[in-house]
Length: 191
Image (cartoon, rainbow, N blue to C red; front, side, top):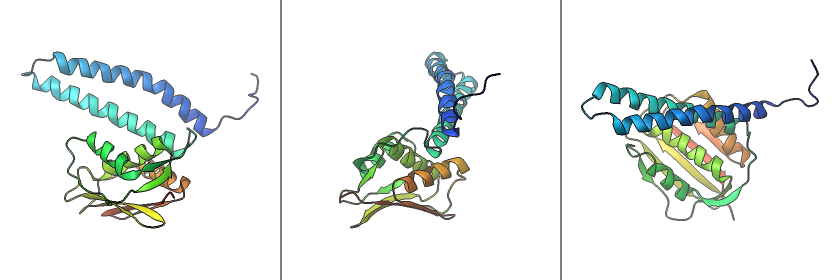
């Protein structure tokens, strides 16, 4: 067997696996969508199984996103963005969330890769969307923008999700702190 001329990095492996797994996941997502449309409303047992399939596909896609962002399999292309806009857009994707957003009035501008910013915010929302008395807030100071999530208790995050969030924050010059009831992400404010 011929030796490879270059070593394959973990990021390349994850990028390849992600690409290969997205195709069957997409097919499952389309099948579940079709079944949800054609199943009779009174067939509650089958509808529950379709809902479960949709949740499992979303969970698998989320794990692939976590792995991709943790290993930085995609190169960062930072842009100046308003974190409040990213949060507002992400919250619109979670129709049944119980979060109380308290976004600062001033622009919360940061220099961050748009895809990584969206992933970071989705992960934060995922931690708090089912929590009791959960709040999500931003605060823009002179030098940093803070994203704070607070609840009585945070749902159990996956280690990979937390690692990808920390990696994104640190890659963009920020930090992340997590306790049993709060999460604080600091990002440098863009000039």
